Image (cartoon, rainbow, N blue to C red; front, side, top):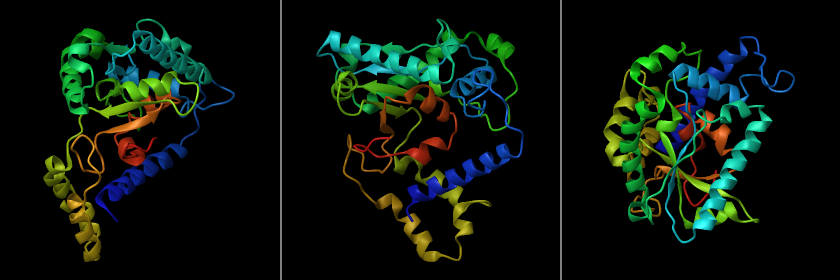
Length: 280
């Protein structure tokens, strides 16, 4: 069993423990869908809770435009993304969260910097953008604190808007505006680092008091396989031969609100990750 698979199992175990705890309390009725979907599974309700927990007022992905061959095609692409969000939010009776000043699909558009840009370059710009914009968008720290609510059980204080972004290159743009095939975009994890950068930290976690390796102490062959995982190479993507290259091809259907809400869970990326060119 490889390290990435083991991380997925640990993430699943953590998710199942939380799901079990949720089953022990009465199912809450959603004010948006009282007769059909409980509030725990209403994605609009989830996003609203996340905003209250963070003291934030704006949600939505930041989108990087990485193709400049056709302005009309790009405008059509953005329109289809917005239409997809609207249709998905209708399933949860969540149009109130699409009002101006609440939902924002921020487009970063700079041909001199982004035309054909690498994922690394986009990630670096995104980090800098987040550090600069969080208070400009959400208000001062005092304003954010005044709006904050105590986090409900199982709700993490990890704002998705400032942890993940979307990149659209020529191929993904053409898929979005096409009438055939699957429509997809690139979902980029903002805090991703290559395996070699994180290996020492991962080994520390795996050999700590409650780590994975200790629980596998009676299985030396499996431990050896885990330790060798860092040496396994996959076909290079932008020079990276790790299994997790820090981004995925994600279908437009369900991108917002479902994937957006689910990415709040710190285990979600490891659970669902699929290496390109395969698609989530």
